[in-house]
Image (cartoon, rainbow, N blue to C red; front, side, top):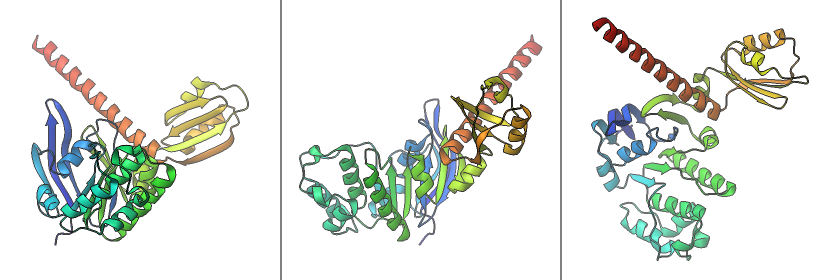
Length: 319
């Protein structure tokens, strides 16, 4: 038995000139709950497609439990809940869940699956009469119809209300506690912060960060400063304070991000203003995510400008 659930080694995937996944290498292990984050176009969906064997990699290796994705799925070791893809409409919820259980190599009892997914009360309802949140819970039931070792979830709680989302994640924690690997892509960064043992940040096909939520926040290298001002707000003076990476003024309330909060606050008092309700704290996961991806974009832009400058110099020298 391998101790690695998911193994990517030097994986690349491009669509024409667009590189969706670039030299991706990572390992996921049994019992981990892993959040996959990234802005639109970051390569999350392509990464999940490669993991599930829905698309071939241009180069590199993808293994699940030491074998190919298709073989692992055929062996019943993978359950997937994808954001896209319709459900059969002219059937009842119980019927479609029973079909998934009948097809799984290691099925659970149908009623257990219905109960775990929170759809037992709508088991006799036609699938085409479900709300968006109910459809998501049915997709979850299909993904957990058998004893899979890896559960892959793409935007799993889209359309669910708060109560359903809380119940869903309680169930997923139980799955991880039983030794299963849970990998989920989400735009709800508060879910990743609250649920994931590990966070992966993808941007333009590259893995920018890999660690706990706390480590990702620390990687951003900035802290959040917030305060109120009683007098007029001089936005230009505030924007000139040292070590700032962002400033936002809303009425009399000022919010900043600084790479040296102590120095920024010291300089703030040097302006002769008196901040009230001053708060200095670490970035939340969402703010850290934005800071990390923005820093990558800035670096890429600088590299592009430098490359253009070098090319221009070579052309002038040649002339």
